[in-house]
Image (cartoon, rainbow, N blue to C red; front, side):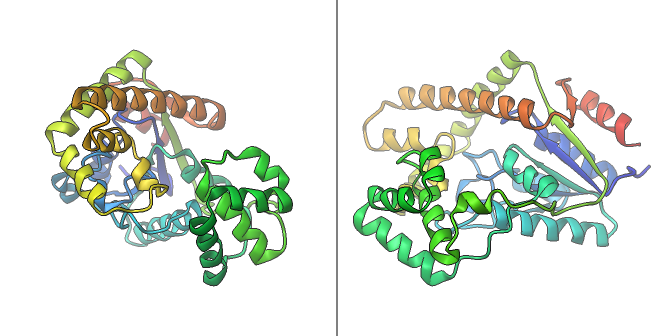
Length: 307
């Protein structure tokens, strides 16, 4: 039996079992799994981001996993365009697109759309990035305060990438980013979708977070972070902020013991899972909630909606 939908969207907090669920559904229906996790796009971070293993990827087609270098610039808009192309390619091949991940903004792009901000020319981006590197984030923040005080008031000085983006948009268009964000949005994908969000019990999820980090360490997470650190990339890159990377990096710098790094990374992972659940609860009100932890029950719960 083929689900009577054009695409299946599965959101959930980290360590909630959504990747295993997507794989089971893809194997049952000949589906294509499309990544909606902002850290699993980086090829440098298979272990520390719990990206599907090579074996799992061989059991069903996986798209937009590990397709970027850690140094590559990437945006939610770029992901949306690529994800839409993968959805359409899967449908053209007669397969069920299964979009799965924990990055809520990625799902919002598909279902709600983006503000119609024109592309920023490369020379403008280079100009702003040069300012950022030469004079620091305070110089960028000062200019953003002049041209877009609303955005400046929403961002912290540590939000280097977002501040740079705000200045780039103004320089390229002559309009503040906050103005563009008020423009009507058009959803990228308008087909019939099944929307599901996993909402596990908190203690169960936190235990899963802790256990999974231990498995990551056994699987080579430290060596992965060491290799990434040895590249000496700019510290504000998103890949360097992936869960566990900052803590293990500080261990490698002799700032923490390995046990301290492990405990801090677990704590940050639990906090992130909590923030994800809060976001899903507030932003995915109309999505179907799946609370059962066992895989087979999750599958049957989803199928009861989409058959």
